[in-house]
Length: 228
Image (tube, rainbow, N blue to C red; front, side, top):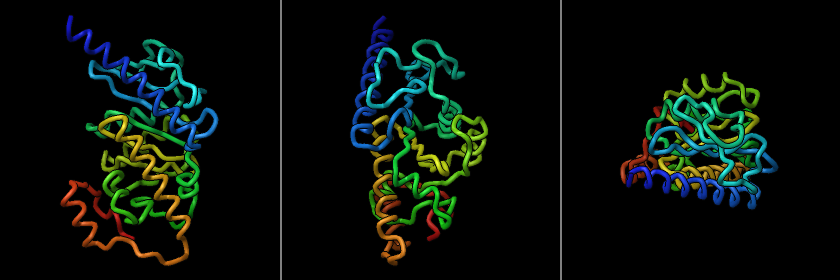
C-alpha cells in the first residue's frame, strides 16, 4: 500500500513538473502556439506526455495523456502526434527518463543550414553545451507525426541524447525532466551563438579541451561527434 501511495504521489509531482516547465518554456518564447511536447517515464511503467494541440503554457495536470508501456492511451486527453518520436528515443536510450521537443527559433534555423554536419550539428563552442548536450545529431525532414521519424531516431542507435529534426526542431532526452529541459535550453542558446558568429571564424574548443571536458565530467561523445 505504501509503494502504491508513493507511485501516486510521484506521478502527481511529475504531472505538476511537466506543466511548470512547459509554462516556463512557453512564456520565454521557446515554443510558440501549440507546438512542442514533453514526456516523462513513470517508475511503475508507462509514461506521461502532453496532449495533442495543447499549448505548453496552459497545460492541465489532470488532462496529460497517460500511456502504457506499449504507448497506448490509458487516461487523459489524446496524446501528441509525436508519440513515435518519443517512443523511439526511449527504446534506444535506456537511461532516458524524460524527453523535451520544442520548435525553438534558433535550433530550427540551425537545422535548415546547408553546412550542418548530421553527426555533429554544432561545433564544440562552449563547455556547457558539451556537458549538457554532448553532440547533436541532425536527421532529415519528416512530416510531423510521421512514423518514419522513429526509424531515423532508431538509426542513431541511442548514441545521441540531443537530436535536431530538419526544418522542425530539437528533441532532447535526459535522465530527469529538469535535465532534459536544461539541455534543450543549452542547445537553443548554442544554436543562437552559432548563428551570431556564422562567417566570423570564431575560436571553438580544441580537441584537447574537448577530451579534458569529457574526462572530467564524464561526457560521452559519439565517434566523430565533433569533427569541426
